[in-house]
Length: 162
Image 1 (spheres, one colour):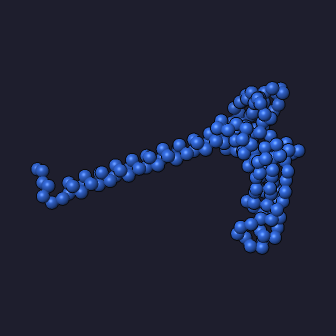
Image 2 (cartoon, one colour; image 1 turned 60 degrees about the horizontal axis):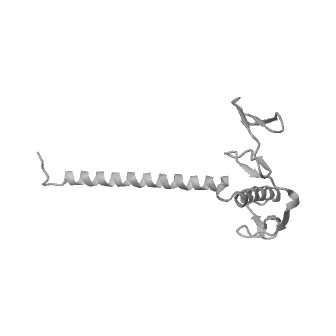
Image 3 (spheres, helix red, strand yellow; image 1 turned 120 degrees about the vertical axis):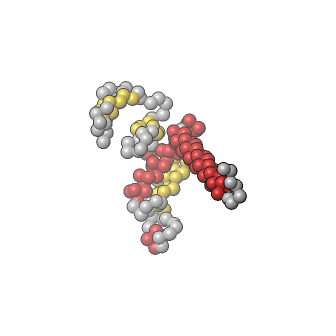
């Protein structure tokens, strides 16, 4: 549970449930906001509603009549950049609108910052961790295979080395 208390217009104080105190300087450049509720707090651009064009269209995919007849698929277009996001993850229009805006913020972050975007760097870190985990698993499998071969060679009849 976090509580944000404005100290000044330049610095925000964040009090966590453990009572620790974190001071964070304001971000520069684009308008940014802390994404509360995320596992890692990352700075993403703020969406200006005047720059968005929102449409509700009929969904598609599995679900039959429940999805095909209702217009709960949200299509967001960011007019200055031309980025389009389509979200039909749930049957609720409100939840789809919220999720579409989250996706749009992440896409705008990638569009504005490119390779320096926090979304891209987190993805790269995840891929590297996965590759490292796979490499370690393969090394362990190879060690087991060699150990079993050594045991099999020792237990063959005729290999008495006493």
